[in-house]
Image 1 (tube, rainbow, N blue to C red):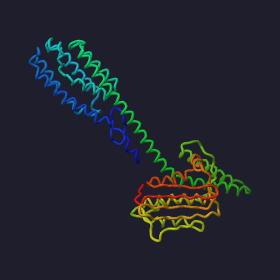
Image 2: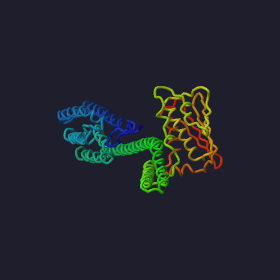
Image 3: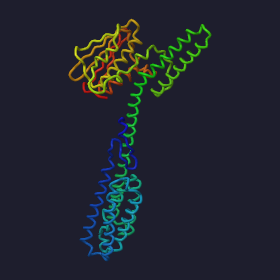
Image 4: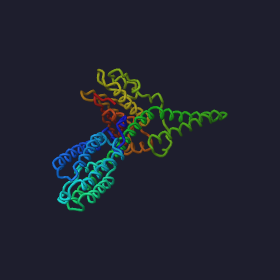
Length: 419
């Protein structure tokens, strides 16, 4: 995004926006659980293998189970490596161990509720399906393990049914939580992308407002004036200038619509000059602190008065340029909207923690809600060139006006501000 660089996909276990994901710790926990469950199953078999009818078959199975668990530890710790083939082999091993339990153990032990060979290791398989695909794959794998338990080890006993229900509940719950987490991460990613696009759009809107739109407005006005002036001659040159002005006006309105994302606004009849649209931010020295007062003096004339401290008012170069550009936009509004006889006063206050610039004029002012109407019409001088610049510096921009009482704009920027 600018901040938008922080975003990432949140599908299928990928890292979410900001480089964090609730899935990754869960996958690591599943990997650790499988190793601990293997140790538990192995210890139980060591304590009871002498009671099995075919203990060698059990040792062969555990040898394969140990090799597989250790070989897939990294796969179950990463959602990208744990694919459907890994999960399929894992489920096959779990079902094989359950079926082998009914063939290698004694009927007496099975009837008394002896555990299967993999015991709780089979739950790691269900958790893997849950983390990878959600609650539905978890329920399906849990059902397969449950059927194998009933058919291959002891039938539908109370202990078997109890264990199967717990396995299904745990798997479905984890799968559902994973789905919610992915949906939340996807929403956060989209929100960050929208925020990044909005901020970039605002930045471009400021630059366009301070340059391209001003020039197009001037060309439209001068073309119309030249067309009117030359209408009494042969008409050829007048038509050319009038057509040029008309095309410039159309392009201005289309560009404003692109900036605001809305329909074409009504045609604007500007009264400005491109010399007044220059961006002081471009003239600031990037090498070090810049005197804000020196940047503001370019806006003074017989109608605009500047009051500032005797010494330089230093700000970081880029911050001083952006603040001066915001003041320039406010002064430009005074020249265009306050009337030819209106005066304006710039007041710079140099405080230890912040710099405040106030712009006050004695023009006619405007009614409440006028700024909102102008912004909807694509006129973004206040919202972008003034308020947007100051907000990007971490400051505040306040505007006060009432009909007949002029306008006062107060811009306050922290001394350590940097865009």
